[in-house]
Image 1 (cartoon, one colour):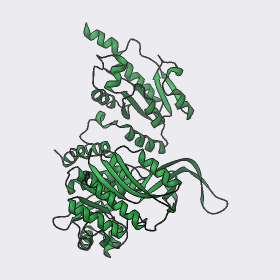
Image 2 (cartoon, rainbow, N blue to C red):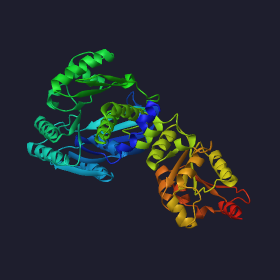
Image 3 (tube, helix red, strand yellow):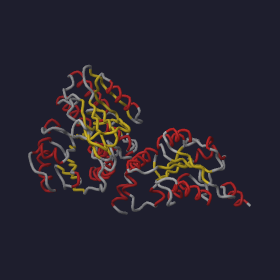
Length: 487
C-alpha cells in the first residue's frame, strides 16, 4: 500500500469531526469580467462586468472548508449591524453542519473584500473594513461561547485576520480554558507578536509571516526550522506548521523530528484562502483523531486543490480522495463526483472557454443506445456531465425490481466511457436541481422526447443554451435486455 493510499484511507475520519472556530468573519466578493481596452480617463484597464459572486471569507472560509471536508462546526464571530453583516449571517445560515453564534456590535463595519478579475488575472482589490478591537463585553461573550463549545468540540481553531475580533485577553481566556479541558488549539496567526497566542498547541503562519514574527530568514528547510523553533519558545507551543507556497509545507515540533512536505500544485490559479484551507484541514483531521503528520499531508493536498480554483475555494473530502488515489483509481471511479465538486469543476472549465453539456438517465445495463446518446451529447459540447438517477430514484420510476445494477456500478461504468467527463448521482426523480446548479450550455435527451417534455429545457434556453434531441438506436432498451435474459 502506498503512502497516498494510506492517507486517503484516513479521509472518512473527517466526517462528523467537530471543531469550534472563532475569528474574524468577512465577505469575499468576486466581480468577474473581461478587460479588452484601456480607459480614456486614466492608464487603467476597463473591466466589463459579466457576473458577481459572494462567499464567506476569513474565519468564514475556514468554516466552509471544514463543512466541505465533512466536519461540523460551532462558529463564534462578530459582525456589524450593517447590510454586509446581514449578508454574511445569511450565508452562514445556509451551511449545513454549522451552529452559528454570531454577535452583532452596533457601529461596527463588517469587512468586505471585493476583487475584480478579468480572465485569470486579479485586476484590483478594494477593502471596506474596520480593525478596531471589539468591546470588552462582546469579547467576554465570545470567549464564553467558545468555552461552551469545547464540551462538544475537541479542537478549537482561532482564525486571526487582525480585524479586531480577537483581543489578547479573549485569546488568553480561550487558550487557558482549552488546555484545562484537554482540547487542541490551532491558531492561524497575524502580526509579529506571537506571545499573544502563548500556550496554543499549533501555529500555522506562512513563510512571510514566520520571517516577520521571528526576525529571521526562511529561505530553506534549515532556516525555516530555526525560525520556527524561536516561535515555539516564544509562544510555548507544541508545533509550528509553516505554509511555504512553491516550497511546500513544514511541520516543526518543540520536541521531535521535523517534517518537510513538497508542494503538490501544478496549476496555481488563485492563492486566496489557501491558508484557511490548511487550518481547516488540520483542525478537522485532528478532531477526527488523525495524527499531526498525516493531518499535514492531507492539508498539503487540500491546499493544492484550492489554489487551482478561482476565489476563496473549498476542498471537499471527495477531492482529497481523488487527488490521493489518482493513480490507483479506475478511470470510471475517478469521474464520479458530488454536485458541489461538479459545480467547481464546471466553473473551472467554463473559465477556460469550454462549452458544458449535460444529459441524464438511469443507465441501467448500459447498451448501444446509451453509448450512442452519450456520443452524440459529447459531440455537441466540449465537456459532458452525465446525471445518474440514484437507486432509490430508479426504484420509484421503474418499479421495485429495478435497478438491476446499483448506482455505484452504473456510475463507474459510465465514467469509464471516454466521452463522459463527470458523473453526478442525483436522488430526485428529475435532474432539475442538478441542471440549475451546473447551468449547462447544451442539454441532450433522446428523440423519443419532444423539447417541451425535456426537464430543464426552458431553464437552459433562458440562459442562452440549447436543447439537442439525439437520434435513437432502434431496438435498444434496458427493458428488452431484461426480458431476453428472463427467457
